[in-house]
Each structure stands twice: as structure tokens, then as C-alpha cells.
Image 1 (cartoon, rainbow, N blue to C red):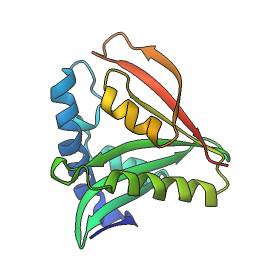
Image 2 (tube, rainbow, N blue to C red):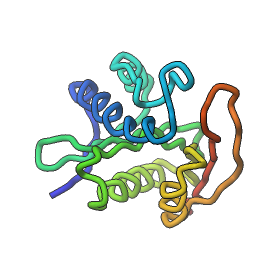
Image 3 (cartoon, rainbow, N blue to C red):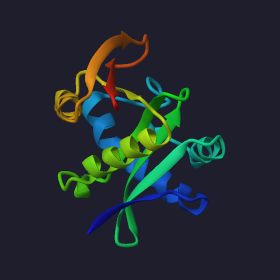
Length: 161
């Protein structure tokens, strides 16, 4: 049984490991390296996630009983807009609705905190993920090409209320 719970400080190292392992499949598929995209989740350092945690970014884990198998972070840009970050589910746990559960939990949290919308940036060329977000109600708001990235960033947004 999968459930979502808030991440505590003791969960940071495991969460960072889950992000790295989950994002590696995407890095391999899209030619992402530490040289061309050093901020990609595949290369996340525990210290960076710890710093985000200390800065107040909300973090939630997907758990199968006591074992963490997924992660999501939610950052308040202001009182009404939230940024969704680092959605990660270990490959062997994908397609079991865990990603949807993490998204729903983050959206519900944002609404309870007064949020009106959530924004996310994803790899535009990842057509499967793009469609997945569209099916969850997210709409494309623009794209951007960064000089060193081997992909285009697609920005998406969902109105919550």
C-alpha cells in the first residue's frame, strides 16, 4: 500500500537518493550530463536538499509501508502561486498511481495554504510526461531554450480554485 507523508529532516538523505535514482532514467534518455545540466536531479547533492528543507520548502514522500519510494517538493513563490519540484518515483514503483498521489497531496496542501495555482517546468521533448501532466489538468504556458541544456524547458500551470 502506497501513502504520502511529510518529509522530516531524517528523511533528507533517502529523499535525495530517490531523486537521483528516479531522475537517472530521464538523464539517460535525454542525454543529460553533469556538464550540460548540473542542476538536474540526477546530480542532486544531499546538502542542496537539506538547504531547501531548511529554507521552508515543503517536501512529501511516497511510502510503501515504511520504505520511501517517491518524493515531491512544493515551494511557495508567493501567497497564491506554488512551484512543484523534483517529482520522483523509483522506476520499479511507477505506473501504480504513486505519482498521482504525490501530485494530489501537493495540490491539496497548496489549496489549504491559500494557493490558487501550481507551476512546473519539465522537459518539453518528454512527450509521455507532457501528456501525463496535461491529463492532470496542467496547461502549457511557454517554453524556453537554455544554451547548455540538451532539451527545451516547458512551463506548465494548473489553476487550483
